[in-house]
Amino acid sequence: MAPVTRYHPLLVALHWLLAVSIVAALLLGYFVLAAMPNADPAKIKVLLVHMSAGMTILALMVVRFIVRACTRHPPRATTGRPLLDRLVPLIHYGFYALVLAMVATGYATAILAGLDRSVFQGTGEPLPPSFSAFPTFTAHAYIALLLAGMIALHAVAALHHALVRKDGLLQRMWFRRAM
Image (cartoon, rainbow, N blue to C red; front, top):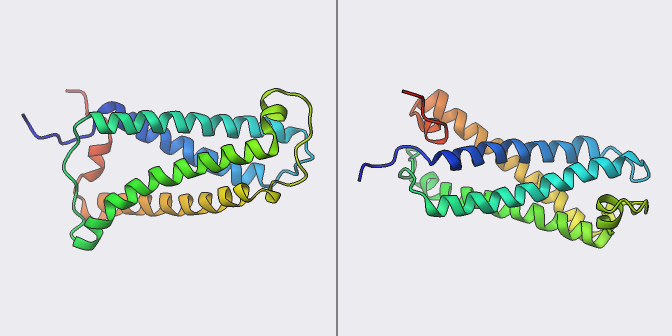
């Protein structure tokens, strides 16, 4: 069997779809939701988008995890530094853990705040005066900061491989050119 040089196209598509979705959900949370007072009636519509994105991200993560487990992938890339080579798998699984923790704390906050009624059922019930009363919301915010930092680190590492090392690593997580 020939060695695999790229990830499965479905895994590639899921990677980039999740990347865009996660960044969009983070940006929506930080720059739109955080700036809106809970008394603003428009916040419920924005929460609907944010929470729906979170549920979609969870579903896509489950599919991604299954596809990753069921498909062959290229051998681990090397950074040229043994310590970093040992850390890379932990960092990648850390992404899974952080995204799942984001979803979990988002769900928990929604349950504690009764958002299923006000956001999804449209009952007209007001939002709580502040979400910061819920420890799960505080955890959600801190995990979001950690996730944003890891995304930035991931992007810097990808750029390092592309621009400094010029090792073609990014081609593994992109679609094969048509022949």
